[in-house]
Image (cartoon, rainbow, N blue to C red; front, top):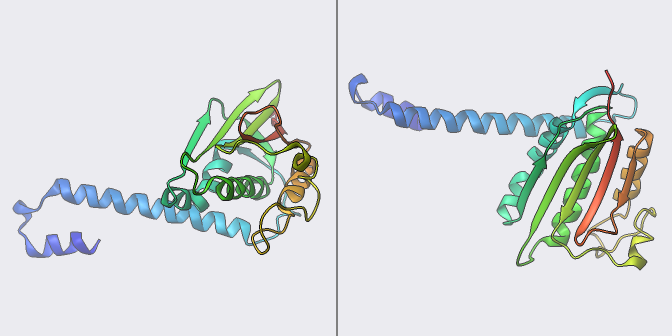
Length: 203
């Protein structure tokens, strides 16, 4: 904005580079939009949503709002984010709670693949017989069977002291269960994958 102001103040109307002004205005608009999404996401996380009514929400909106909180972190760490959304089912849910589950999975994936030579995280959504399927897969090689059996136990964590509480997955499972869905680790995947299944809202 200051660059545009200086350009306008120091030049005549005929010599102003309108193309450059449009480009800078586009950057301003994009930045403001990104900031507004971050603020909206933070407002959702800063309050207790347990008593909120469930509302109809496109799953793409939940994904977008969640990514607004962490996209820059992944970009800075050179972790590729892949969004594969073949369909956009509508959920009857508390959006901030579903976003909380998704953010927890993304943060877990970040911790798992950060520093790997090839690091990526894929979010996929689709419909399956009246059920919305949301999966988070990362470039990790999966979780050993002995750890899989303990994943949903409260306070169980494989992270070093101070890096995790061991509550994220158990809380996530409770949230999804309360929404009438399922939350589980996909042991058949070649990579590390968690699956969220939620009923599609029939209007």
